[in-house]
Image 1 (cartoon, rainbow, N blue to C red):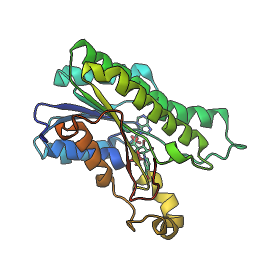
Image 2 (cartoon, helix red, strand yellow):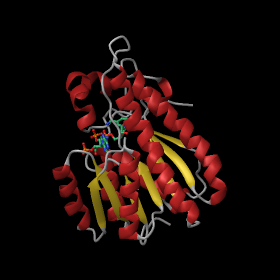
Image 3 (cartoon, protein in one colour):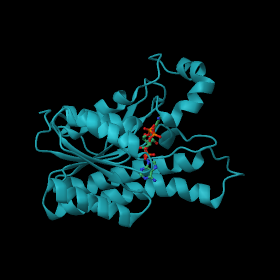
Image 4 (cartoon, rainbow, N blue to C red):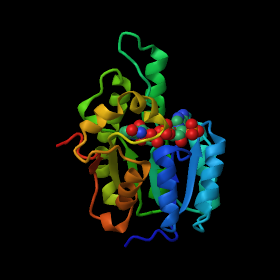
Length: 251
Ligand code: NAP
């Protein structure tokens, strides 16, 4: 029910943070994993070395998720290496401060292109492969609490994360009949490079708002992602799994 032997996974933005924990956990459970990075080749190399210790075949390459050509090339290279892909995790993302009166068109576009266009490009490319080959697959998109309750000064980010939830539900209905489950994990605060500055400034205040009383680690998100991809979750489709210590109780 839980093993991933002979499964092939793509994790976007796998080099650091939550993506790296997802790569590692899939590898531990026997999957072969391909992940992309954008700038941080050293982190990607370290992660590949670590994950290969579990015996997994690990492929990684540079790929800017904002560029559909880059994405198609990355998916083609992965298929050349693995032969098939059964699981896709759309994780790559950015979270940049943007008060609406100061937000430039470039700020807006950069966030939309990274978080939303990237999710679309990877999903399109991998879904085509799954449909053409009648693969019973699983796609997991990473949203955020911001996608459900909004987030002041990060409205572009929240807009992408809300869109990812709508995208997930739409594709769950569209691809479910073909045997492809589409789900979403929506993390709250997690200790990564993305949240480091904010946590430095307001960790105590943030923790006070979390009923479980601590900030999540990347592994706390990786577990639910791997669960959703597994056969244990074979009847879960179109679900938004909130993983936030009870910080935001979403309907
Ligand atoms: P992170 O530590 O900043 O890592 C971001 C990852 O995305 C890195 O692997 C980075 O690659 C990659 N990336 C960024 N821009 C890219 C691009 N244009 N093309 C390809 N890859 C790109 O972030 P994280 O905290 O792990 O976040 C992962 C996901 O969880 C994001 O979708 C984020 O919105 C979501 N999330 C995070 C939190 C949190 O508190 N951390 C909360 C809610 C949701 P490089 O290493 O090469 O730069």
